[in-house]
Image (cartoon, rainbow, N blue to C red; front, top):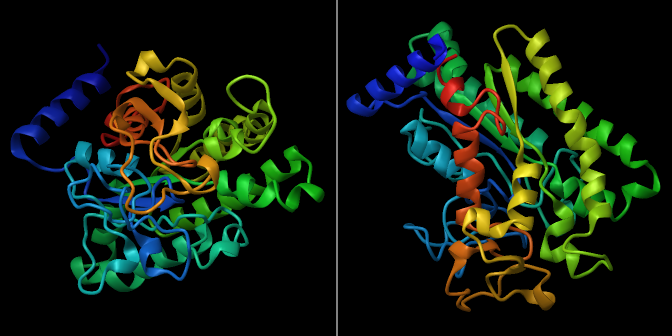
Length: 349
């Protein structure tokens, strides 16, 4: 057994016994897969602040696009932290345990998602984090060194990019870019955003891959395809995913004391879709809730969802159920084949 594993296990045991969090804060960036309610306060149709969303969540329909908890919620529980609240909902003192900046329908590119109303692009989200670091957090620390120490130990999780394909590339941009060119455009922009986060103090960052968009009901019910998924759409995001690790490794090697880790969301998600029983699932093709537009859109308000959401992969035509988010979170916490380093290891570094 390696020294790192022994030390990690000891630290975890001490934290569990003493009740101390494993990291001082959790900061969240992304799209609707991570949005915990920011879009509630924005002029947009991309909202989930109504039933049946949140039907299995203790606080109800908070704006999470699922029946229960999201990946960041499970990660917060593992770290011993409260769920990071939506950043634009904060009206008084900024919590030092983290914030959620994610915004549904938005993406890496600033133009992505704007057709449905206002959303926070990744650039907007980093701007808001900069405001947090420069204006709000200093009030809680004795000086800049203490603040930077806190940020260096905090965990940053990111999940974004699928809307850049579904709501951008597949509508307009494909006329101007090859799939390879578009993937490199996204990765270049993403790298710039990550460098900004680093300059603001982030040191431990986990970026989840784009999932298998060719398997989601909103795509499979609109596009003629063979088999369970529209594999040509999955191939599109593979250009991004296949080059993501190299970009993250380059940042880690060039930015001192940083760790940029990749979360293998695509292969894990695809495996669950193709082998549902392996993950305790029964239905990996249909939305759990009744949706608009023949199963290709959001949940219809007030209607009861399926009786067994924990056995469904999809809650609506775009988003996953709590049970699938639990798999994506727990594997990143524990499984080096999904996240390397794992979150258990990352909190020790």
